[in-house]
Length: 171
Image (cartoon, rainbow, N blue to C red):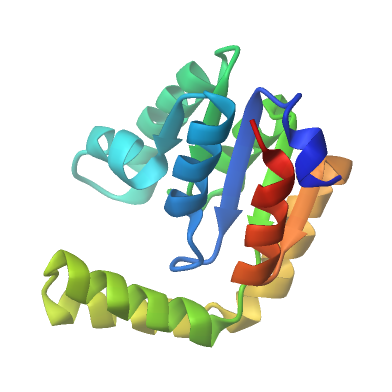
C-alpha cells in the first residue's frame, strides 16, 4: 500500500517507538487529508487520572472506543501500551502506519524535542532510558501489530521512507 492509496482511508492509526515522529506524521496527514487528528498523549492522557495502570485502563479504553467509533480520524500514539488499546483502534482502522525507526534516531529526536520544548533534562533522560530498553520489544511489537492489523499495516523504517510516503498522499 502506497501513499496514493491513503487518500481513500478515513481512519488511520499511527504507532511506533517514542521519538519516531508519530505526532508530526499525524499532523501532516491531517493537513493533507482533512481528517481530525487525536494524539494519545495529549488528547487521551488527560483522562487517565491517578492510580495504577489497571485501574486507569477502562477510562482510556472508553475514550479510545468513543473516538475510534467515529467515521473519520487519525489517532497517533501507543499510550497506554496495552494490546487492547491498539486492538480497538486497529480493528476499526482502514490503515495502520507503523514507524519502526532505529533506536538511536528516536533517542536523538527525543533529546532535540526536549531541548526545543524546554523540558526538564531528567524527564527527557527518563524517556531516553525507556526507549533504549525498547530494542528487545521492537520485534514483539511488530509481530503484535501484524497479528492484529494484518494487511492494513505499512511499516516505515526511516524519515526518508516517511517523506516518500507523504509525497504519494497529495491532496
